[in-house]
Image 1 (cartoon, one colour):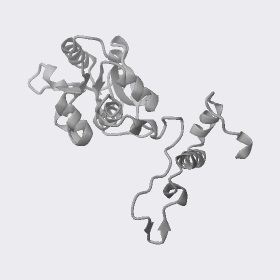
Image 2 (image 1 turned 30 degrees about the horizontal axis):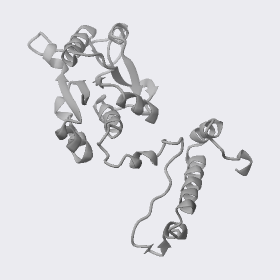
Image 3 (image 1 turned 120 degrees about the horizontal axis):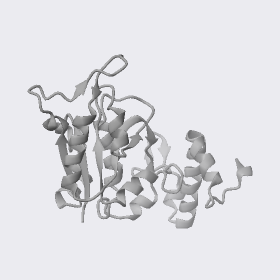
Length: 242
């Protein structure tokens, strides 16, 4: 059974967007994963297809109504025919990371709710047990771009999407580290040479160099990840070296 993504949005034409291209697009065409997009406005009952209203307590902007969104969610869930995670893309949610991408890839699919305006009525989040996920500490105009980012991270982990599975083993965050630098031809460019070790043919030395560079980059650029890496049971790095 293929991995099934559902998206609830006010802008269905934004999907599949970039996910219809390259490896993800070919995997979609093959049926390795499926995408169902629902226009939240389709469940609105008035002639203006209204989905939002002013917030109680005052304040700027509008809020997506609980009754409207709940009906759209329930319709999507009925079509899915099995329970999958309900995810609302929100800057106040849990930070999305590679571990969460793996977790979602192992499930049968997910339903992504893309907010707009000032957000959604809190009651629907509680009533439908919706998980909030954030892709970073910034505010977007809506959840669509965030949903695309999360789906891209998940889809590429599905069997067969990336081709050689060894490609996934050496990516950033796989071992708790950022990825090592990459080089290709020509061997010299603008006075800069490819490191000799990468041209040596010695796979042991190459692996050691790559590990060292991954650790160096992580320590310099992401001290938070570096501390987690050092604290991990699998780390054999001598802290006194750094």
